[in-house]
Image (cartoon, rainbow, N blue to C red; front, side, top):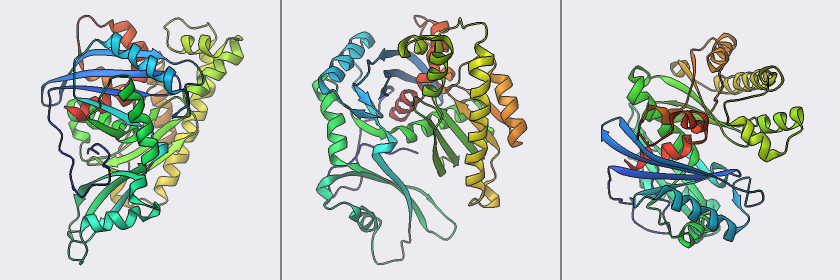
Length: 362
């Protein structure tokens, strides 16, 4: 499933983009700019050519919003220079919190078209000139009813993001929502490594900076989404409190191999307990509205890098009675021999969205 570049106020139904065997995904959080450059050797076989993570100082990005244009441009240029790539097939992310994602049903037998129904849904905006949007038919049921995913955002928010990239001399070919990029990463992993899950109902939890995105999907279709309040920031603050460190020092501890002796007991165990409770809460909300045909067969957790991830997975499985695995999708790609495997394994949890964006561009 793909959501292509947000449309301007255009009558064209589709946005046509050139295909490429090389693709660059770029996303940003309050803490870092993340770039992943992929190429495809064959179907479902990815090659990780390069990746870059550039830390961001405080007050440049605040909860996904760009607060300091010039500083953000400077750090984008720094990331671009470090990557040293001429790839023109570039997909950038827009935070889900700045968008509205909905699935609408369209009956082709009705007198109005799919596009006309989309326009009616977009009437929440005072004017279409204020909206950027895209939509895609994601499935047609047995009765011929089309399920259409519509993504929309304020034009102002989209333009702010596009402006900083333009000023950094980066020209995106597409923009996509981080939530959809996570789905792309999951689909890429399933197709490449576990095709038996392709038609199963899967719950995906991606641990991010300020929270965790929860997505329940089947056949590449989003059935349910929810934001969990627990994320990397929870771990960072726990590290900071327990070891009297600054936020930057705590961030470094989180993504390095050597940890304090009591790290598991004081930081990881409380996180595991709260995170498992949050997963149970999400599943409870989902099951109150789900049909029996969409019972969850597998739980996938992205972004957790810890020596005891397997123990964590067993704990979640025990509490939910659902098969669970902790993984990082970018690790399915074959790596360029210049990439430090140890460093990649430490940082791979930060690359899921950028990886999913790059997968979409291939």
